[in-house]
Image 1 (cartoon, rainbow over the protein chains, first blue to last red):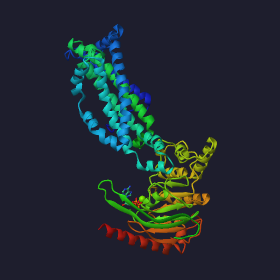
Image 2 (cartoon, protein in one colour):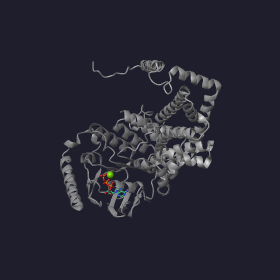
Image 3 (cartoon, chains in turn green, red):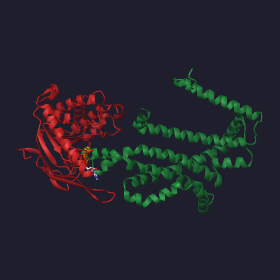
Image 4 (cartoon, each protein chain N blue to C red):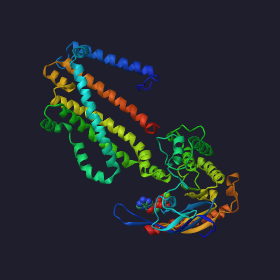
Length: 263
Length: 269
Ligand SMILES: Nc1ncnc2c1ncn2[C@@H]1O[C@H](COP(=O)(O)OP(=O)(O)OP(=O)(O)O)[C@@H](O)[C@H]1O
Ligand SMILES: [Mg+2]
């Protein structure tokens, strides 16, 4: 006995272990909550949370909030990607563009997003636009900064090889710089997603009248802990599936990176 | 210098770099003269930083000469061209491409007028020449260093260049594989009739492969001496180190290089 916790090798055994893990956790939680060891006002039982989730979907309140959040998030993210990727690539490729834009990019990137929420509300009122802009700004700068790193760090000997074998400037960009940069774009999107999600929740909690953030805020004010937990659960679900998706994409886009990291 | 029917002629090639940081000038090459005959194998040896890579880059058309010029088959070099291919010390393979696709890279930007089938046949042929058949779908990260460089050589050969420029191609390969690959290189060059310029830090490798050795001085590089290698070919069929010419030749080159290395120290001091 080494005393070290060893995970089973088979895939199914590991899945079974995870299920057992979660079931045990929820059972303990259920018992602790039902015994009211902790104040039920902010510590509802999983079964109550589950009921709140089902009711919310049945009467449409959670469905609407979820769809609103997802729609805003999608619009803000797509806009951030459409703007951020080209700007980042340009800044990484052109020293002039970098010199011109980098002070603003770094300043905005280091500014905590919560701090500009009041300003956005001032400009856009309690509108969807305020939320969209906050998601956009939250996701934009991580994307720009990551995309910028791609062309900047491209292996010079790959460029040399490209030129020796006759690639034009354009071909060099398409066949060497861009593929090299692809994994950087994916990590930019990955960071952008998490930051954008934070932006979304902040906007909905502080400004909006819709979305999961609003549900959380309302549930908090009206002491509806199960509903609050249900909304949190949905946020976790969104966040986890997006991160998993991006991780999958990362492996697909740059298998050599993961491989050499593992070796 | 001055061999008849030279295929590559370098005349007074000088390169002075301008440092980005402070704008100061750094002379890397100072008037290199060199003739290489068609089908000849020349090895360049010299102290580190003496401008060997710079010279190869000038021949490749990657770096312009500050003064002087290089002609290949009578045509002045101004840019890279399909007549010259290069093999790199760090392989410079695209990590996102399979072996097959990396080899294809050597043809991708050329106006060769080949059909798809002909291109595929060329790629197959190049992969076979470097004994990598069966690894077409592998990615570089799945290969050993020696195998990666075989891909690099296949990529250089697939476009059927006339000149092969190799910058320490086996420098990062382990010693065992290295000797085997030297044999392969000799065989490939003989089979294709390539005119070859090889840069190496290994005197043994230079003697084993080259028809002539070019000893370059410390920076700024100049041709210090050109030495014929009188050993019969193919050299990997016998133990060249046992050949009576081998030891004196090696010692002579070693003495020259030691002198240049000491000279380089004095310049730095
Ligand atoms: N792009 C560049 N800009 C400025 N200086 C350079 C550049 N490339 C090379 N140098 C300098 O020129 C000199 C010659 O470099 P080069 O790479 O040609 O030497 P080398 O003989 O190939 O050296 P090594 O044996 O270490 O490969 C070195 O001092 C190097 O620092
Ligand atoms: Mg070098």
